[in-house]
Amino acid sequence: MTEAKKPVGSGAGRRRTFAAGRSEQEYEHEVLDVARVVRVVKGGRRFSFRASVVAGDRAGNVGFGLGRSRDVQTAIQKAYNQAAKNIVHIELKKGTIAHRIAAKYKGARVLLQPARPGTGIIAGNTIRVVADLAGVHDLVAKRFGSANKISNIRAAIMAFRRLR
Image (cartoon, rainbow, N blue to C red; front, side, top):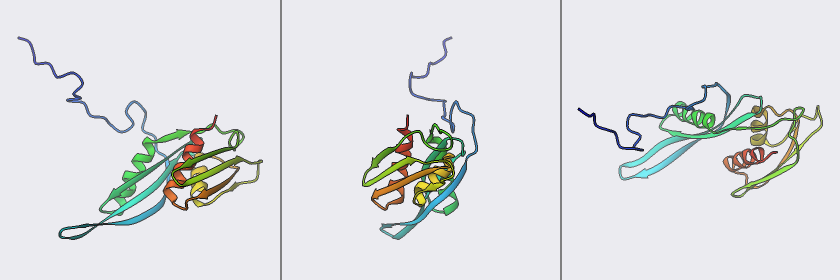
């Protein structure tokens, strides 16, 4: 007797696990924002929460995630899991970045510049959190345009990703 073959490419019987192929690593994380989101439906209003989390290991790896749920803790956990999946590696050079870089994401523009040792992180709140969790010790940053936290974080991570 021949056994029935599964259709090719259907993915039947396989389940993708978190960080498939990579070892699960714990990252430090910081919750940047928790927002209460309201959706109006036929029976009234439904409330949920949106959390934005930055995760990193302070050794050149940083990621960002958003999570939504009916309760705050679950939203934070979902955001952390997404941030851990979207980790970007940054090459550090004596505690700072290698060169000046600018990036744009939607309405947000950021400019990151290397700084001398001992300068610290001179940046706004969102870029400071990203740089700190990435392990950058000395950095000068400026944001232009949008004051939206999520857009500014994505622009900063895009800038870090484009470093040579």
